Length: 307
Image 1 (cartoon, rainbow, N blue to C red):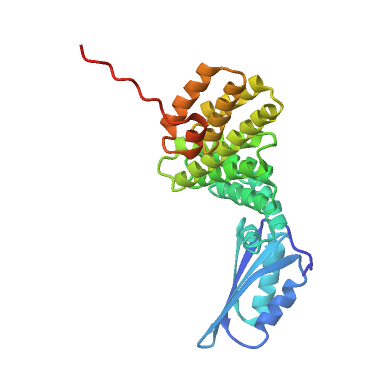
Image 2: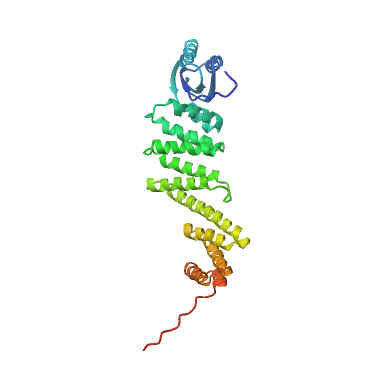
């Protein structure tokens, strides 16, 4: 038996049944050692002297070669051996064992080898994407998840795939100061999930992730505004602060942007604009201490005398 892990998606299940006696298992494993296979799992039960032995193999030899081995063992040991082949079982076993490199290799082979209508194909894309994600290959993960969602929109894994793609894009945007391309892709992907799969149990998680990403986008614009504010380039700062309050009004960063917008207007003596910002701040944050400190209390309108 080859000592190196076998990176193939093909697997074989040998089921041995018959009278239990010493040497059956040893003979089978000795014969298997002569061919290019890897033992993935073994289960054995003996009931009233009858042996039931299951052996799952990852293979990269011809099926005829495995059949020849099983026929020899069956003849020599006086047992019956059933042999079945499964395209994905070996790859799933590699995935369960966290052998991500082997899983990627196996599922990549399946995604190119399986017919387009094969029901195993969407699951192959899903496990390929998940294996890439486990290896922190987030762009490859996002691409495989999206391939599943786009090619099989009616599959039960389609919403999971969109969520996985959005999460992978989100992980590619490591901090607000960096280019926001992947953050925007993450938001678009999560929004596709929300619009296309109204019954998905992942909707709440997707909405929370959109809110987190919006906060990062707001932070990015706010930090750009502060860059100009500190350099007294108030006209440029105002542009970014306005972007924050217009595009991300529900984020925690919006209040800070309003306050800096008010301060910018005061620095350049735009009194009317500053008053309008204060009116908005009082309306949106009526009990906020920072707002009262910046804008004071709302002016009391004079009573109009009744004629």
